Length: 348
Image (cartoon, rainbow, N blue to C red; front, side, top):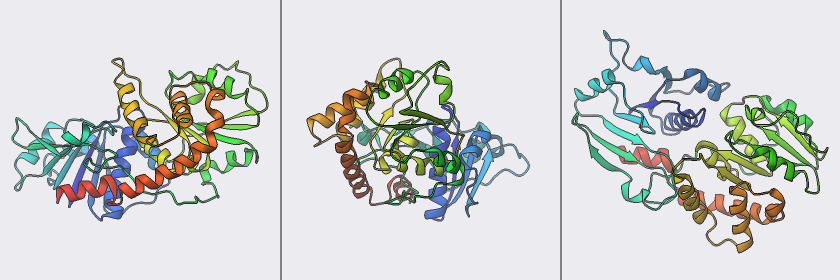
């Protein structure tokens, strides 16, 4: 089938990362024809840099979906509005005259909240006559599932990708490796200062742009060494997560990838003024920590709210064992292939 995916980049990289991963899963694993339309190609191209071309997948600027009036693009079998973006009116007009009508899907944000299953895959009649189906990614069987591909190998490859080779040579053999990808409002400087009070060495890998969150006058002991990463492709970041002892992630794509890396992590969820993010975070932690010991539950909750590492760091070995069990549970519950496979099955 032919799939058109529309992506408007709102929050830096996450929206583009999800759309790219979904598009290539549909094309490479399920042999679909996919066109990905994006309103910010420079950002998308950063994420996919170095990736070989994929048969059946083409990336286009947003305007290319409707700009060629004399020879408009043929209507697809499926059109996906990622995260509530609206289709360009000229493009939508083309869908309305196609017979049979294309399947119109609004791909929603991932949530562990229980209500998601009640609204997943429901139709919403639109004024223009097409039904729009709301597709909710999620952790349970009655949701749209998780975007799994490509699954990181276990154990992961030890050789770093070229974008990380230089920095990897600078890491100390006995140091704990911590990757940090967080929003600017995070109390990162205070967090690192407390981390420096722990015994042992830590190599801290700060993703592109995190340096702006730190005061240049910050002085840390030699036990803590900061490494500032360049912008790296999506697959290289997946590999990085698998190689660290602890990961701080944000957004949706890195949130799922951290879980698949089977390492301790916490999710710096995007803060919302109405505190809706606290509800979403609680829903995930309740699911993630089901059956965990009280000590680990306390540690995860403390870490997820940027509490001092010294308060919960001793639980790291237990947390790592839990992370491996959680990954195995995810893969068992998503044995049908997760989001891309469930989308394909739903449309068929």
